Length: 69
Image 1: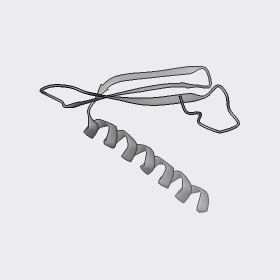
Image 2 (image 1 turned 180 degrees about the horizontal axis):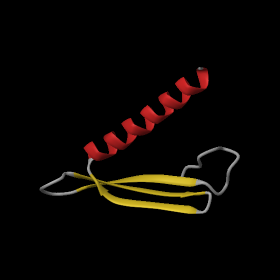
Image 3 (image 1 turned 30 degrees about the vertical axis):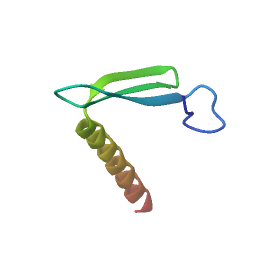
Image 4 (image 1 turned 135 degrees about the vertical axis):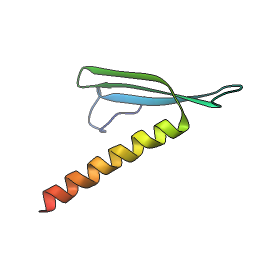
């Protein structure tokens, strides 16, 4: 599992992909252990994963913009 920061040995995350037959051809599984909190989301489609990524990027842009004001 990758670490969120190189100096951290406890905050980890990973994203897995399973190719399936029929229906949704991709199923993504996000697993994270961050500051003692667990995130475990399974069954995301590629589109859902892209949407989550887009929203995270949007929040980062808004935070950078707010900081520059």
